[in-house]
Image 1 (tube, rainbow, N blue to C red):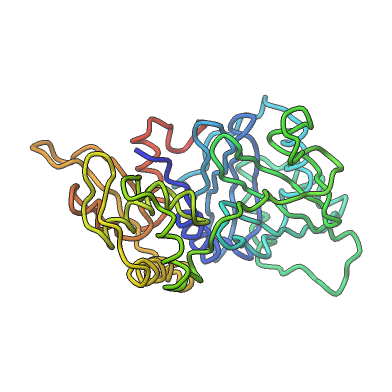
Image 2 (image 1 turned 45 degrees about the horizontal axis):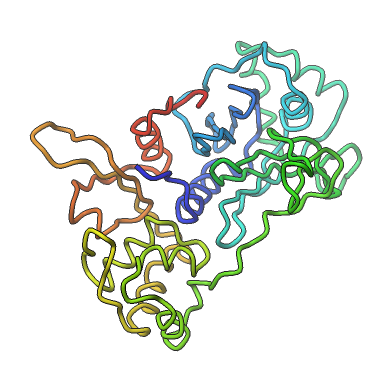
Length: 341
């Protein structure tokens, strides 16, 4: 099964988190493992539980049905800063830069020494006593002791990371430190300015015209893999999305991925239709199972919107939420659904 976190999935989970935990108070936060955090957030009169991971094999971001068991014995600089500056903070906004597998959490916390000390020493049984604080908005007119920061969750396979950035745009700490010897393009180290991952020099599928699509098609080898050409030619198109576009414009491909090359007009129209979900946030998550005598069949794919090429081959099953669908997909990939990768 392909990794589920493409641009569409990141957009879908961002929309779900915006609707669920924006303006929520971070009551607990800690590490499940050195690259995975778990948090309890009080929003809308109830508790929500968040998992974010930069694990090389299983990067993920979603809500969980319960707070995973945090490893209190695991002490890292990143974990310590999360507890100091994020616990007790208010999530002011959550957003995804266009066509990026990146989610930004903007957080504000008033660093009152007495309150911070009290929050840091509360145990699980006492959290109920501070939930009233979650109903109090941050006073933006009084900036004294107010700390603004951003948690970046980058979901990019083995390059995934969790990065805490101060209000001056400098990195405080990260789940993974990236030195110059590891990457000449982008270092991730404390006190360096945060720079987003450099975008690839590819076409924007949201703005593709029939004429520009025709020029793209003119450069595709007739015997080549059309879906692969889409991945390499356009921003934000994962192999899953490329196969869907190929199916919609050309029908099923042969065993080698060869298809009847569509017209520029058909390709542009199909791309605009598919990417409309990004503009409308019309997310309808599904999982896809193998057909067969055994019920239910093995999960083979997840998608935040219905995929015609998958429905033609597998059993399509709608899910109640993006997080619920991702949990099922993670389990099918052999990842623990609510714990470390």
